[in-house]
Amino acid sequence: MQAITTKYIGPSNIKGSRVKAQCQAGSVTLGWDDSLNSDQNHTLAAQTLARKLGWTYGTWHGGGLPNGDGCVFVCADRPDMSFTLTAI
Image (cartoon, rainbow, N blue to C red):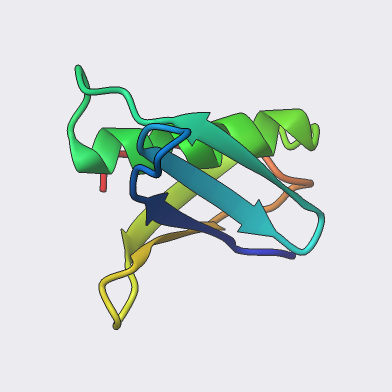
């Protein structure tokens, strides 16, 4: 069982703002979508990573990290990993 953590990455001289989702099995980095709020951007990144890894069913819950650096998503049920991200 793995947790997905997400982190906001500010803009640089070359790239715009991004959000990175990562876990032991891999990572994805998405461009920040200004039409979404912060929670929605972090949720989308976690969902994208889970789908990339083939984690396709179950209920996930998200919450903030103590240092304020992003979110962590964990699967609440686990018949084998399912995917339904809930709002943070």
